[in-house]
Length: 117
Image: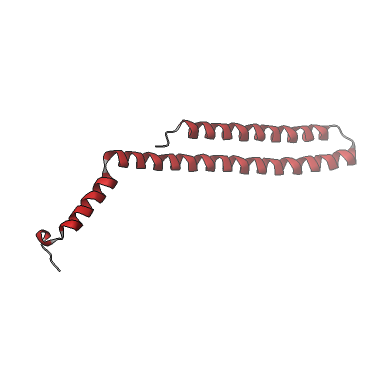
């Protein structure tokens, strides 16, 4: 097997040169880099929305539990202060729902305005 580059088959050198031009041309590198950046932003946006969904789910669980306990206390005692707890639990869920919507819209806006390639 020849070790001197002068003995390399010219067709092999030609293939290497074509491959280099096809993959390393400035426009190809730029487009590929932009595509990778877009994918990274898309993934980050999806994670932000997933985190917001988790937060909404957690707030909903806490609010439902609090409302259930308050309802049980209200039924047992008749004290109106437990109605306030139920209302506050509903307010928590409303706030978390608004946060989820805002995060989803912001993530979509960022992704929509980010160049894809």
